[in-house]
Length: 154
Length: 76
Image 1 (cartoon, chains in turn purple, red):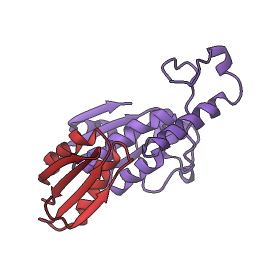
Image 2 (cartoon, chains in turn red, blue):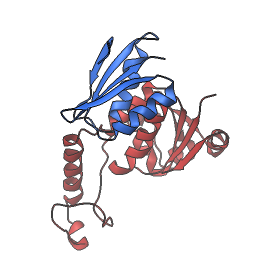
Image 3 (cartoon, one colour):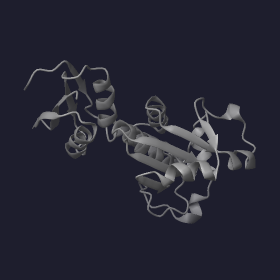
């Protein structure tokens, strides 16, 4: 009997996109059956156009080349700059992109489930999302999670 | 180093890519054939043995040369 991993992905930032896809693709490589339930901002991770951003605002732990006070972080372009910096660093260090990890999940049959309630809430359309995903609700997730060896809320 | 049927070099790639690439390479091999995996990710030192243990693909040998980690994995 394969081990099972159940993840709720609730964040739609560049840094928030890594843990669900990274852990699920690795779990699948280790022989797990893995499912990710995408809810609220996590739905951004299922978009065809994966333009994820990271913000230094309200995140004092984010390493910056020079300390930037919060008041300056609200300036236009700061988020784009932080995102550019993070992407450059990820590439330089040989870290897979979120898109690559998502692709690895699809390749290894990780089930990607869009929360139907939040899809409706945000008026997202099926055409906004990549192919190969499914839809479900709280009961769908809980049924799988009740049998899972590992359950994570990210 | 023992004989191997396939080789992948993941030098420069970080976690979890060595494990993901090991899975992919092994899936193309028949049982009993061996894969030579090269990695520079320091985490692979622990992650590849865990991958081998959990997937039932025996780790035949591992060693380090020139800051590179070498693993010989047999398809189970």
